[in-house]
Image (cartoon, rainbow, N blue to C red; front, side, top):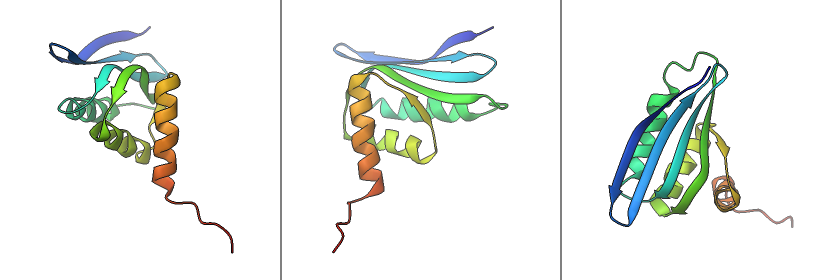
Length: 113
């Protein structure tokens, strides 16, 4: 049995971010839709903090398949989530962004002498 609820939805004419949480026995998914840009990045951070609470052996998944844009602040939030060992579901766009962020997180590649 799964349950779904929307924990944040903010909009301003052309800009919008929607965050929903879907729960099942094995996982809790935070579904992010729209533009991950300021000032709504704080909404994602808050939603993820709440979603981490009381997981009870369930997996936490951040679903970014429906994210259409990510700015620098959004990238920083995703980096923080990566450092916290969050698991992601992605589309082509967000998969590319996460690969770039993974390289940034690891730092510059050292060439052998």
